[in-house]
Length: 406
Image 1 (spheres, helix red, strand yellow):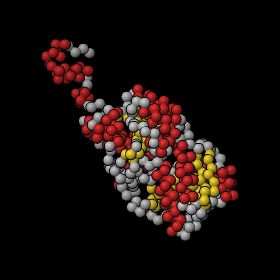
Image 2: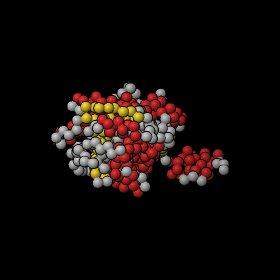
Image 3: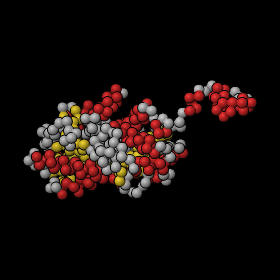
């Protein structure tokens, strides 16, 4: 359809817009909507890390939906967040390639990308374009220790997690009469598992524990029989796994099959230990396991409401979902503060953020070299088919059972 020039001249600029809209059959409201803010949502939704990546994506998209329904970015006139989805395919190089595509697509920021090795690649790729990259899960501390001004992590890294885990282990063991003296560490081979194991190997002897062995395994691994046979011969008091979901579940199932029962399975960032999926699928081996991991504030009604919404979708309320949900909320709050979708403005807002509107067991965000220094994990234990918080006291909803009998 054509708009007559005389009609445009007659109506003036406002009239021209109205005439154009009418001629095209568009409502005027459609022309007045603020431009959406495009955010890259990048996770490994295929490959060996697919389950966790899919959970992360779900958490991010649920947060986007909630933010948009609540009015969008109000400082930008109610601009909606428009997610731009990417799949890292469980490979760092693919994650980096996805960043290139997202840059071309004009995203204002990126959230992701779950695994530490992938986050290393994606944050580095994003740095070339001064593209703000908010890390949701990746725990390797090197991600935020390279001086990349574009990189921010909402959750704790493995150094913080291992330190808290070791401190609490020593307290539990001391209160119980020090029944545990030896430790065996089993970890997957990537940055996450290796870095966590190295931290533990250094910290445990300093408080009197003997590390009898540190065993690295491939990711994926489909047979733990030889590792568990070695465990059986060494008979450690405590077994500490640091691996992703599939390997974690298979390891403890193999321990059960070979009747290996240490005084505690005490995980640090255990891929299955703090997972309702694991508790439901393998209740006989999950019971009693302690984990130091990402967890929500169990006393916050918003966290409980989100759990209800997630389970209504037929999904498990895993740390990937609620951690990434909260991370997306943080990014949205920074865009709100920036009053802009400009990358530099968002980066500055993230660096200066003091956001406290989350349901995690953190204080207000305080960023030092890209890391939220207020972030902390919680200690959980599987008891009577549920995951309960045991430490610290202000979040605990039950007492720990240590050592574990059977």
